[in-house]
Length: 470
Image (cartoon, rainbow, N blue to C red; front, top):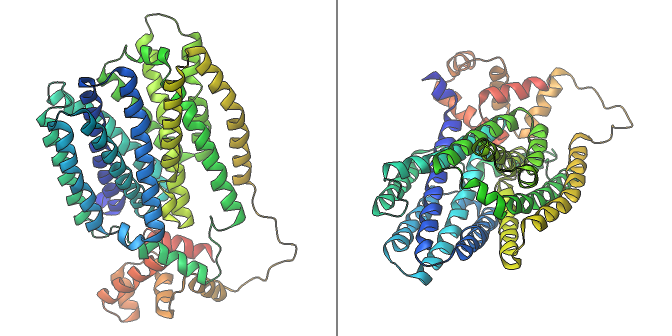
């Protein structure tokens, strides 16, 4: 129970995000298999990974705009619950009404909604989950969606479009809504934005508000914008797709789930290594297309490609969620996936429209690698090049002065400053209440205000940051 209590926010974010990804995976495969009743493979590919991805990107962009301008509305639990409820009739029409035109319309609508609630889960994780474990949070959630899809298909006899799948979708939506409504500490627009406002009012510069921060986020956007079409061209290459058919759904989902979890762990350990692994992972389809020939290792070789692809999936999402959490600009959390979806869709539609062969796709990927490598290392240099050192020595503050500076930076009252000092000593609410002759409920109230003003995850982080001012 102590572990659950200590990691409550992380666990709840993982559960909500995992349930959402499982729901989205079921919807994707349900729509994918339904299209076989009406369309040829070329059209199915254009709709499922072209227009559907564009719709997801639009939904993500709408969420970013909504959160940027109406954060109080977009963060409301009732608003998010309503989005999931809207999905139910759309899903029912998709599965139960056999109509070609209607199916396409429902696919577009569903993917816009998917983009909206995916933006919510990303922002929720950036606001509530520990920044040091955002990669694992995302990797675990995506892995549950990947592997859970296979598991549900097995329970349903390998069929992805029956009424039983409809029941699974509705049960998942009910679970997600229940989790959102029960999560009383779910972020609100005031929590992070309020902390940012306090920092701005005290003169503390925000990460993304500085010229260096803006440069890094622009470079990161450009890197993801180039990585996405390279990944899409490689994985949609006809020869690569043919190799992937050697694996059944279980093997594909299992390999991908392992890759996602591994990538999440690597990201949390070292973001630079994660970025390098993501860039290197994009080379694998080229190697497979150029070098691989029929052998007894086909399943292992292709399975490894699913493991490797997990690195880009984690990097494009977690890098922006982390930046959003550290900069207090939560609306940036879904930006990486929004960019990736738009450029992935454009690449797929281009491949289909121009009927690009295997060798041409390899040439395109190779050409795109040149600006990618340049921008990636420019971004790394920007991240590790700190601001210029001041020319004049700065005045050294006394211990009391540094305490006052901490309180001033976060807008703490005198009483909150006193309690923060006790938090840095690791004292419990009861001990603090006894020292200050207050009730424990009053101490809890002050601790809650301290967390809101500083934007920190828990009392341990407050104490750690406070001690760093000594």
